[in-house]
Length: 119
Image (tube, rainbow, N blue to C red; front, side, top):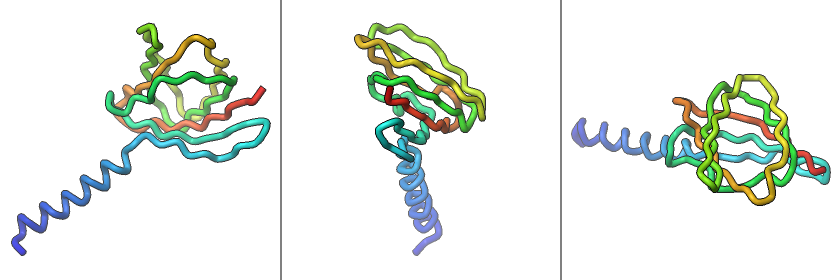
């Protein structure tokens, strides 16, 4: 096998695996009648926007990394949320008639732990 082909195959495998590894991921940690806890890794890219959704419960978000989100609601209103590593944020449930999506506009993955309060 020639060297260029071997390097190309090796890079192809690396890029393919890297692409799979960089999908925004939600990893459930705990779910009971009081709380749901999950860790989320949100990768930077307008292709990785979280789909339109709403939060039906109050929650606490603990930033495991620094980062910034661009949050757009279904009416087109935009706001930005800057996270500081190791800081906790309390967020009230979303309005019943409003959806939003989140986009990581940082240049690195944002990691958060979310504790949803089932109140």
